[in-house]
Image 1 (cartoon, rainbow, N blue to C red):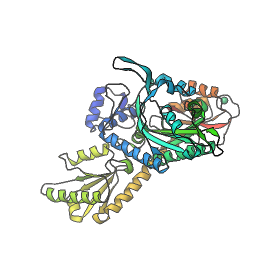
Image 2: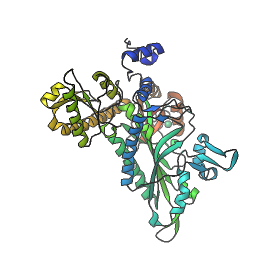
Image 3: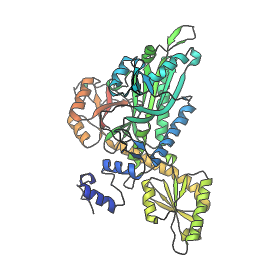
Image 4: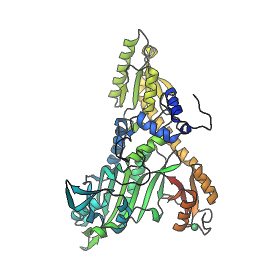
Length: 498
Ligand SMILES: [Zn+2]
């Protein structure tokens, strides 16, 4: 069964869709992104959204194995830069949460409350952390005594809870989500500014290792984190033209230290307020970005650094050759295992073709095929998951070849991802043009006067919203504000959001 060019998978009736999947070995074309994504989550054992509480998602084996690798990369980097790992409680008392006025205003509508212990009503209501500033700062107040205690840098990987009112979407937007948050305190503003920069560099480092394409933007002031002086954010592109915010870094100035009275004795012996920063990376959203940016019609395409299995060996046996081929395959397995690779030998009863489909869906970066021919010539056939390109290499050169191919796969998917992002960005000089760009699922680049009213007009008339201006690079404006015609102050990016 085929599809005509103007008939996408999503538009087919459910019967036709099942028939299509049946015929195409469970595969859905990526051009039907929403269906493709939901299908990959289940087929590749990433996540299951059928947990009986809406907005709460189960990470499955392959998905959580990838998530753990992402967390490991991030935690190692944070700790290398002096952040201590900690673990704070999930509950925050109501009175403590309400100390910072803007913060409570920003989050109060979406917190989950704990009000009872058995039949008894709690005297002091507790809430589940939507983010941990108000859990952490009462302890910062106790721990920080003098300038010698600063800077204080910590991080934790945990679940946070927000009663999202927008439509929930597995990994992208849930009511419970897994993230890593870092919190720091400093003696002066300069040091906290240096920290914001370090936070952004740590995140860039991790996203770059994952080959993701993203914009690093300073959010407009009306869109900053509740209680922040300013916020910067990593916006990854998504195949549906929306933007996936995969991390944020916030300069909090003295807003929270005032509210929580976090003071220290400075070098002159005087009491002073600390400056704080915080940054958070949503692990589910990063995983969603990896799936969505790198995946293709056959399923996942994983960067080797986070693939739970990096290589799958598949014996291609013929009658009479089974023993020799299987023995040879085991030798190849041993060689690669001892070289430190995460490798699996698929000697199950499936036919080779079925095994190819399976491991392609799981995004394993390299497949090794060994058959009677390979046994004779003492080599193996390598197939790259990203390009499906095949090559042959002798056993003696295998380890070196795998390392080289891993590097090439990483470079290739990273290049494709950035190329796609750059193709999505289109400069626009009128609201009409911008509107049509949003309909075409592009990211608009416009001149803006800086007035929030003009930003709200854009949101009302074109569906997309101003995400911000490049944080690490100043861009010269090329014309007046696209809305009011007044002189523009900034070049900003406009897109729809997830
Ligand atoms: Zn304007």
